[in-house]
Length: 225
Ligand code: G3P
Image (cartoon, rainbow, N blue to C red; front, side):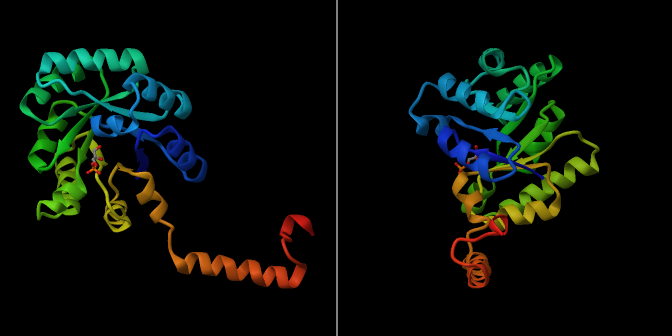
């Protein structure tokens, strides 16, 4: 499973990239709004930092297919043709996806709450499909199960699309989908940090260091001997 950062704060992206094995960055209009910066300024900084080969996902906001198509052209002119244009899985979105996929654009079907949205987006040529796990949970349904159903639909129908599962609020939601072997998950920096935030882990490491220092002296490591 690929692991992407769902955030547009360049300092947070640099910090998480420095620590963990990360495959790219996803954004949405709300995430860009939280940055308070011009969208192409912040996205340009992200592209420059992650490099041309990493996945970058940027969402279109037009309500009609013609507008989405114009946005896809501008987004990829500014940020590279390999940038994934996120298109909402609504009727005009499927129309835009069909046209854009025929021209070879990389597309992510987003705002996915139901398996049939995912099926239509995959048939329309999107390479990634982004179900919103926690938002589905908050509606009283099972977000992880919806994502698993989508994964199964793609497998059963030999569809090329894969999941870019999104909207996670805890490690367990990510773990369940990693066990299921979905293509990718995009996760906020605080939830990625929480993967390894555990007193058992820190106390085990502290105990090893204390024992080693008893043997060799304060602050000593294997490099100092
Ligand atoms: O980018 C879409 C998705 O990740 C939204 O997440 O946290 O706003 O539910 P969230």
